[in-house]
Length: 306
Image: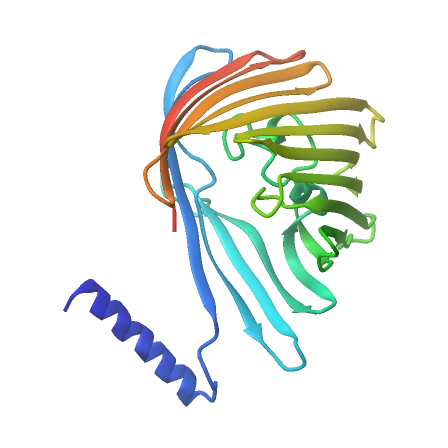
């Protein structure tokens, strides 16, 4: 029996069990993921070494189940997996995992979720999940537990998200994150995207972030500004990011520069498209730190989404 026939037989068996249990029909369910591995030469101040990196490789399931009166149950269960390191109980890491309710009012999600401020950056960070990910210089890239997130419907291109994080203990305070955005994050329905976001007491910081992304012909320009204050020390820092991407044939050339306080980093990269969901890539990133050793990284890798 072929692999496809075996898979079809398994699905049919599951559906028959669901029907026997009283479920009228199969629930819409999507299994998805990404495998991204690179060969990386790293210098973190003590000499160069070579390593394999699993760049936020992940898998998950998500669903949207229709109820009555225009309502739907929505859910997602996603895990990060390291496919390059030694297998262990720490190999899996929880990512966004929630259940919620969707309707004309918008969408309400309960569980573990990216904050509104983190989501507001959209696709601005061209080196997301790699060494030049904005999270390595900036605060605010938080995925929080015990959260309640509300996403508004779109009103003529405008939308908003509010994330409320409950304290979960007597000696802690609740926190919240809020963002308002306009345009299309994917830059497909419009040629621009803007967002303004604010974190209050999230992971010990108050943060204001402004994001703008737009297309000029085939050239994409990405910008972000952030002010962050550490509540315990009242240390206040400002930072900005400027990036650009340009496609040519099967390649996309990328450049990005980011600053936070006295620290800065620059990156150059190129992606080569192998298919709709697959690519090979190469990039170089260099960081100049005020208080620690400077670092630089060179990587080549392959990525596939399913």
